[in-house]
Length: 67
Image (cartoon, rainbow, N blue to C red; front, side, top):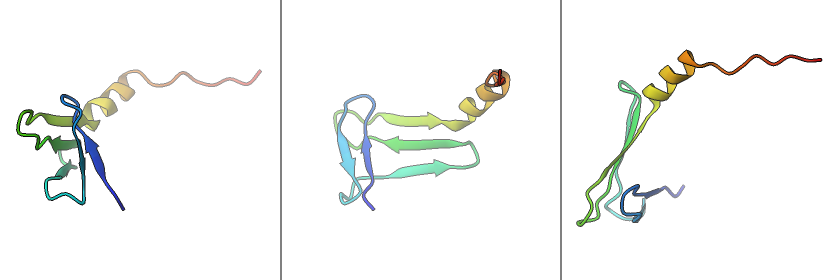
């Protein structure tokens, strides 16, 4: 399986065949993190599942009705 990550800030693509790919799945804080290893960027790309889950509870999808 090939894993690729693209930095949100600089757009540089990293593949898991390179030695510089690291993805962190934090199940305690419900976050996915990828640190860009581009020497000019070093941006921490974070996808927060916890905030999304809280938002879904506060604004659930509307009910579906059949006519």
